[in-house]
Length: 346
Length: 244
Image (cartoon, rainbow over all chains, first blue to last red; front, side, top):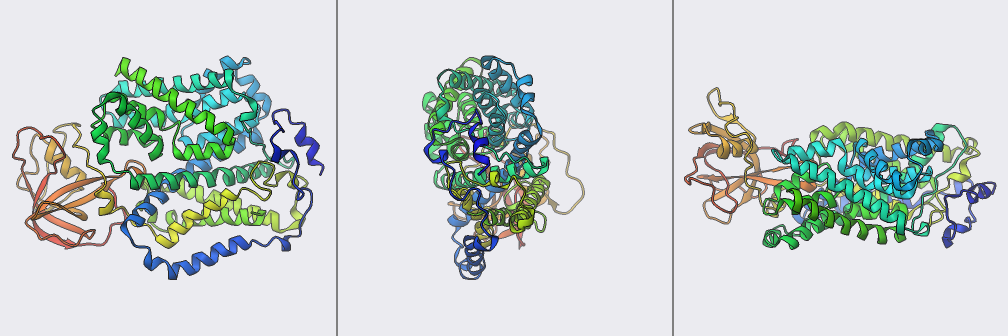
């Protein structure tokens, strides 16, 4: 049990969370490998082998297959970004000393928030990568508000996403500029609001395995830990998004497109439900020709910040108490700012 | 979920990703062709992590002093690693049991085609050679709507796609889905085929014919599809790259 004092002295962790305060009995006891046979996994393998011959011939309904295609597509598409984000996050924990962040970011949290938001522009990825990276930053002592600004900004303002937006909206550079400006504004505002009103007990800063082995061992341990936590939630989000993608008919959308306020809200909700990767959402928004530019902008601003798989990922990474406050906050801010920017510029 | 199981699940998922990307072209049913290297890298990382973790947890001699810290607990989930990680088996089940095919007529019927985009009018190269020209359906639609030189006029073209039904009698659609990133953002590109009896829905076909020039001056409201007067039809295998 020599690890408990070390964990308890970690000043960034609040230990008032009941089920974390007491280390479980299994700590410090090495069960013999023979006693912990992976029965569950054996069941999974049996199901796969038996199901392949018994179930597969019956799983041919077009609705089920379409659902399965979209579900697998969302997972397959997000997985490399998740792995990349998790690797970057693990590298931050294992190789970058904590003192680096105190030097790199302005000392005052109010100033650190916009700097962290701008820093999001250098992470070329989508939203699945940003959640583990933000959690790695927090674990390394970066002010949560600044890490959250980074979390919100990076999927929307990085060069890959901006180029994709420019390609999807040819001849409309203002759409790219509005997306950049509105997303950054929402990220910074959300960061500042969290700084002012947020409470530390709402946010569960993920504890990292703090092994003192060689860097690579710690790197692998942190990656495995993050993948197991974030991966399951990502799949859960993919399940929900695929189900809604197949069930929500697109026709009724055109009927609400004419009413400005309703159109903006509809597109914002659609961005949440469809959970399309931020590198692809511009093409989808561009194809929704019935909607006003402001409504499309709302789709592009909300999507990378709030969607089903992100909500699942954030709940898994930062805890439910965080998600129930942060998700509505971001959603409302994103809708307001994009309506404002869209009204003024587009 | 104990440590052995955690690593087994990671390995299983990694193997499934490698199975569809490195060792086959199944991944093309879900994402763009350019995505392959990223998938292979992600799958390889998962397998390496899983296998390395298995070695560390199976061979007690290699337990490092840091190992107790690394137990997957103390995070408000459960004592033996997060139960939600079991969900990572689901895509494996989907891939191996359902073997999801490329999106077909069910998906095509769900979304409307966006009207042709007004990009680069007249930027199409003239069609050279003689005999039928093989052409992606997207290019056919572009030439039909946006080519001011009307390069399709009188030319035999060959389009490859799957069959979707039409409500109007005497016609059907040869359809190809277009994806921007993954199958979740797919939308259908359709060309009306006249003059040939409709094959069964969802069959992949090569249809040869000539363009029927549009008869209206300006684009009418609603979705309109370019039309092809079909002369011959051949059933084909589902292409490796099912999306346009």
